[in-house]
Image 1 (cartoon, one colour):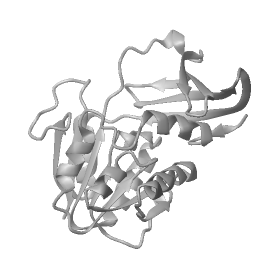
Image 2 (cartoon, one colour; image 1 turned 180 degrees about the vertical axis):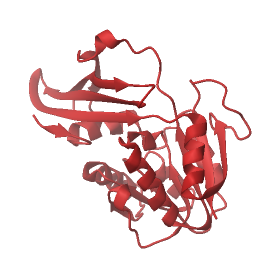
Image 3 (tube, helix red, strand yellow; image 1 turned 180 degrees about the horizontal axis):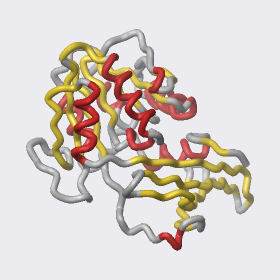
Image 4 (cartoon, one colour; image 1 turned 45 degrees about the vertical axis):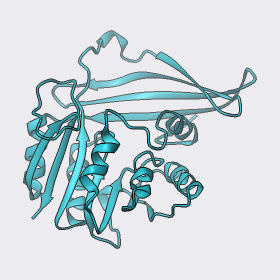
Length: 259
């Protein structure tokens, strides 16, 4: 069993747990409100299987999607076609992004930016996104901080089995273990997630995913955006404009403009 980043079983679980239009803490409503006056093209980076892009398309916006995972894009395309939608979807590494359009806005919902493992890579991604914005274009994304209840004795131990029921009667079980953790100095965590698909009690498929996340301090990320060249960088919390960060359990929503 080899490593996969977003393989077939991971995508099936993702589709079950992140349904089209399923809003997390009001994020879809927030992005739709922020984008409703856009007349030009919008890009959703790390688009996944369509949870956010489809409601935006259905509201009449012009939205392209890009993702590194072929499996995620195939699911997104299938879900779009089922609704009579045909957005431009691109498979690409964001560090090397080179699309044929400039965008009035680029969004990264769901904290997905945190999945870029290396700090140098994440900065390169932000630079490529900056280059893909029109002058005056906006980058909007949300981040969160890790929970601080990590117990070092759990490192390397499989834990937390979850079971997902598929429409055809199959089951997918998932369990994970932390293999590298440095939450406060280098600000990252690496886990392994093991997926197993069962049919009538028989194991028929397995998949192992390497799952890494990197975190940023609230002010740290603002400074990173400004260092790349963004202006008017603002941060609010929990998808409510005008709110100020006050605790580590909040979602932090950044807006930044290309000069």
